[in-house]
Image 1: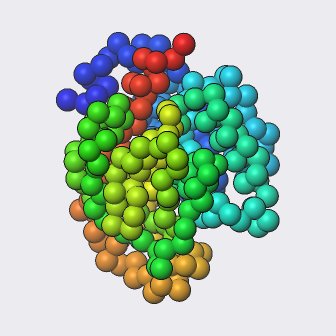
Image 2: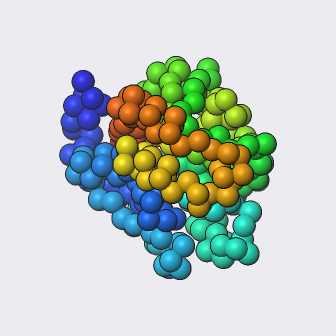
Length: 249
């Protein structure tokens, strides 16, 4: 039985979730489907298109998604500066935040811990193990203690001061919580279509090309892994929505 089925009353009152995306091929995916499927409102912000920052007072929570930019590339991607300012405001006002990959790296940097380069990008399906802190966590406590999940990143997140480590990955810290911000390096939001699209266009990722990424094995493994990944992402996002709906003022 799904979390939505177990907690039907939680979803009776709609909440507004801000989805911050950075490029067309990195949408909210599974997370967006969970939000709209539960009858909530999904707002959008594309800082890369120089859209004005949203009024956070209109939002109950935010999803901060992935992208090809690196957090330190302010000159190449000038829109990173206003986005970082918005993230700082979210952390300051304790707005619930679920951050993925680039979103997690930006959250950590705003909190004082810039991401560090990996020797080679981590691309494909890799194991993640929850820490002891995750057991009592309102979001990660809904997940199994170990799982395989999709990764595509060239940087590793570092644990900010006062943050709690929630998961470890094969390339370092997998996830952390800072206040009511949950940040994960892995992609629990991806659908099969999203993964195949990234694989089809891996040539646009210079780090992947330089590392000699071989797309066919990852493409083949995706068929065997994606159903469990979608179930994991659904449970994780549903737990996040439950937290948002039951704790909002």
